[in-house]
Image (tube, rainbow over all chains, first blue to last red; front, side, top):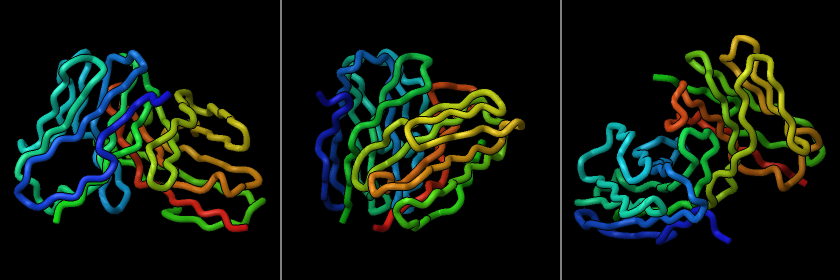
Length: 112
Length: 111
């Protein structure tokens, strides 16, 4: 059983396009996250949602907009994609206030 | 903001050898987490340390948080090919919802 799933796993697109990445967790967790891992493997948090409410929003361009339709889903929409957006994006979830986060397999985004 | 520096950046060891990875924080650690990332996959939680001097073990992996709570080490005994991957330390800075990750250590285990 997949705990945290992301789709798609790979995404290749051109500059200027708009794309979405979906994330679903079946663990019953209240908190979900989006992380970005750059080419140097440096992992950085982007957003965190708790019970569908945004609680962490790091300095991420406005082109990135997370959407949480329900507790089990946190999608990431990116407008006007730029070359620098190329990275692996990870979704994660945890129980509210818990420290252990469960990560999805990642979505490798390549912007050409 | 809190910064975590890991050393070494990469490591190649022969199967059966022991190794240690270090994680040094710019600030006091409230909680220190170790994760492992297999190539092309997501992160897997290994263990969490909170108290100064605390040491935890899982199979052949042992992690320790120093007394001053600014440095942690991860030690692997008798390494195996299955240990290969990227090891990341993470710190919560007092807020469980926000993890800051270290620079990562890439481990390769040769036969």
